[in-house]
Image (cartoon, rainbow, N blue to C red):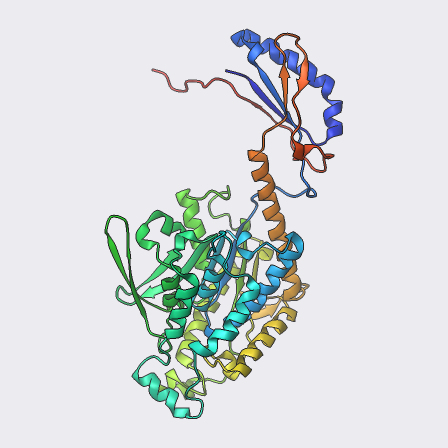
Amino acid sequence: MPIIFRVHFTSTQVCKTLTPFLAKFILVGRYLYKLATKEFQHGIFIFRCFQSPWHPTPDCDRYVTVLSIDGGGIKGILPAVILDFLESQLQELDGEEVRLADYFDVIAGTSTGGLVTAMLTSPDENNRPLYAAKDIKPFYLDNCPKIFPQKHKLFPFGKLLKSLLGPLYDGRHLHSILKEKLKGIKLSQAITNVIIPAFDIKRLQPVIFSTYEAKRSPLLDANFADICISTSAAPTFLPGHEFVVKDENGNVREYNLIDGGVAANNPTLIAITEVIKQMFNSNIDFFRMRPIDYPRLLTISIGTGAARIDEKYNSKLAAKWGILDWLLYGGTTPLLEIFNQATADMVDFHTSLIFQSLHSDDNYIRIQDDTLTGIENSVDVATKENLERLVTIGQGLLKGPLSRVNLETGLTEPVKNGGTNEEAIKRFARLLSTERKCRQLKNIESHKPVSKLRISPVTKRIKMESMINTYRERVKYCYPMYSMNVSTPPLKVFSK
């Protein structure tokens, strides 16, 4: 069994300086090994200086990166604008070919956010994302008027009457476009890990579609199209969705699903919980950390906008409401609006509490516009004017101040010296880029062959094997470490 020494130095100059020491080290090693096995002629010493085209970077795998996208119907245009900007910043750093799925370990989305998630992570024939972030906004502008046709624009009571008889929209265009674009792509085929919640009204329990679980159980490995149709099936707006999943043994699971916003309109905590669960199960391969190590999470959560706090509702007004008023009042749906806003705010509050309590505030960014008014906050008024207005609001949101929940008041307040959302996203992009480069460097070094110094059994001379072509240029960066790994025959730890 050969003895192997791996020595890591910090520069070529240091390597040359240590050459005399290395020769003595070899002689000492030869003597010790000869005493142990008397077969030193087969010994191999390995010397390696690492190189990288990048500047010195921190340790690899520092973060688990999470992207979360809220639900909100046509207001999915807002995260589309934000994600377009984030991806453009990453492309400035790493090239036009990179996509968001290359940087995030987990992407979670609810309702319209689930649709965006599927678009970003579904693979094409080259196993690259079907859509770039810049393609999402045009998709919404083209398809929202067809998914939510404004047939009752001239008849104010037509929408109310239809909502009493069934869903406002039949969902046919949504179903057809998703099945056309996503075809038969399954959840387990996603380019990165995906989490999309829905709610099973037959079992009265949430269903969390997770790439982690889909790879473990075929009955959870549904088609992306079915998942997106289900998580978008908002009550009173779109019909629920029923489908079955079969495994290779003939087992069947039936799903009867509606909008994921019923379970979690803001899926950030679900994503974090799923990551923690995988830590406990030791079922992950992209990071090594202690369980529940929240400072290691790097999370960006993007909302779809909320109504401005202008006190348009009050208890005296609501005390007179019947079911019709709760479903439709002033051009909005108070029941759905209040429910979604409450759950999203609670998730943001608890997530902020986690990061702030562990002094890692900067690892969590929440981008949300809470100044929407009137039909701007509607999930289905897909007129050309309103859609274009949402695009403008999204662009303005980038210029707005970075905000965070005040844990004492529960209100969102600008972060002191936090700059704008645009500046925060740029900082976030640099962190993502650095993390990706670190992982690539680590992956290259773990697979590349190494340069070797061999002891000639005849001449006892040290001769260097040919260096790898990729390492011929001057060393720009080496791991900041010096280590020696010795490979020896295994020992019997337990003996009878």
